[in-house]
Image (cartoon, rainbow, N blue to C red; front, side):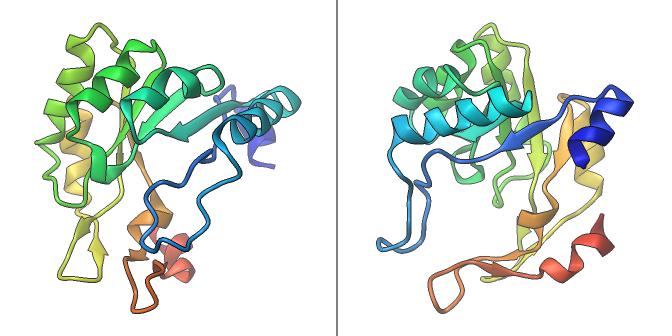
Length: 183
């Protein structure tokens, strides 16, 4: 339904899916079916539905392989300052979407954008996903959206901004019932 509306309005539609979940809290958490197999699945989704693909990368050596399928390489929030990762993603020529670290000010995201652009890739997006508030909660200061828009297009990740990280179980929880309110 969302793709149909986007098509009607002439807006691009992307599916975000991780081929590898490398940032799990617990060692026994599911991390994927294997990189090549998962990228093949994403490629099939792209072909079958005619959509763009967004996927996370966690290491510089993943960039080229993921870029074979993905239209957008996403840098996870905890990795948003990793120069080698940002440059590897930028060098693929794909759009690079950098999620703002929960520990970063909106203005400091300019430096991640600069690293990508200075490598010769002007296709960079930013995603707000909240700032740590205490030990187990995230808050979003909406002023940061405007601040970051001064240097790149900005998206708001509503679901991650409502997370409550690292619950006692070692699995991230959250407040999904608030998505419609925040949206």
